[in-house]
Length: 628
Image 1 (cartoon, one colour):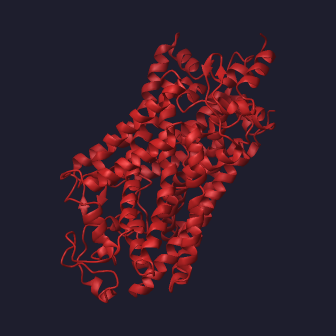
Image 2 (cartoon, rainbow, N blue to C red):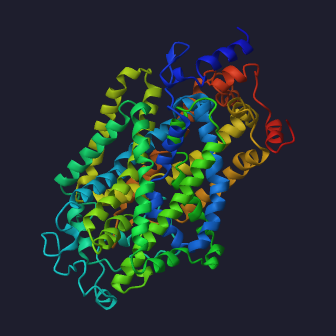
Image 3 (spheres, rainbow, N blue to C red):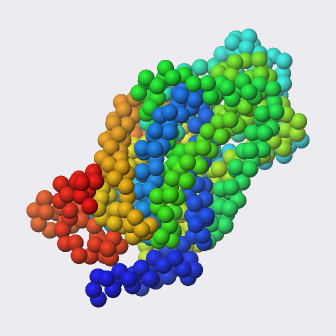
């Protein structure tokens, strides 16, 4: 069979846009991945993953602390130059290959370790951030109480200094006399990992919630916090039950792959927007809401002269969009072959980033109302990370008529924003496992059940009295280093190993036109340099983890660095293995390991005539537009 005949045949069998291709088909006798039912479903799948708790809990705080409206300048630039190019790249390689995160890196056998890194990250992300889902479930359960339990003192978990919601003692002079206590809301929220320092964050300071009933309910009842990570204590029944429900819910979402997950997405990806709008309208009707919104948006352009503000914008974009986690590649592998790999990623990215800004209005309108009630400046009320969700919002809704209703609505919003992100990581991990094992769709439920069982057992450590310390440690170190490294490698592998010309031809096969010159310049030259600088800056800004007033012991720091390194170790290990498997001199082995595998569709079909790789000079000329 000649190349043209083979290309036509494969396009018909694998990449056809027909209804039959929504079910598993055969590609040379092997089962291929099913496709999304329609384009809208494929868009909301990625949107549901990208828009998560980082948009709701982290962005508003980061934006305000780094210049308010002025922060949007580096944020938009980072979105344009980093998030969108990476998003397009991952969607394109996932969609063109129609494979999972492991097999997709046959594009360069030398980098097959990236797939293993994705699997290891997913296995840490799922229990770590899944436990936030469990916390949310616990708050929803308690929201149906006749009296919200976090509004009163005199409970078994309260201290003598407890101040109930609505207590007239809640004023600045009272709080100024109180000694700071160990609290998650006084800790910088490290969703960006590796202890990155925010230049405007004051460490270990007391705030208006150190002794409130909402703070004590979260710390001493919901978390049952111990004295430190050395004292893990026992598993807490209420958290174990909530964590079990979480794992069962996620299992039911992904048990049949995209057939079940795709249907769930219509609710979980879209309903948060309705709920956020309802919460915003209600928040804006409260006194002080305008002050909070103005505090959120008032620009401070002087902060833009600090490089760390720009780095913070880069990191925030990185985690808001969710590139390099492997989920986008996994989701794109279910797209029809001719889905628009340029337009759709741009749509999802823009909607996701606008959601972050919109969520800021919801958060700061509520913070403004609470500051008005406490007669405190807004700056003394806002707190980063989980404190917004589990301390500030419960405090605010308790002051409203029908507090149970607003509490249920808010925590349901959180639940839906987190389920897609966690389920997306689970789907990615199972895709990786199926890439390793022979693909048999009839055993998919078994694989999913075994995997979620393993995740349940791994997550039990977060249900202990010291679980929140483990959560903080994993969150502090996990992700950033691996994500930066993998993003750099993705750009280098696709642009220089596989070849920008090959990649551009692949995109042309899918959407009928090649990549613009500006994209190739940004993605394959500028982006690797910027991300390398960001990685070095992040490591240079490192400091050991803390949790309120608690300093982690040295052994915990060592474990943290092990967590950071284990996510990237598969890359160099795989490099060595792949080179050793080849024949010839060292240079010949390296060159051979950098060639795309014959199983990669771009090599097998579109580039079957190419016997050698493009010269570096020719590839560079093509990137800058001097070679067609």
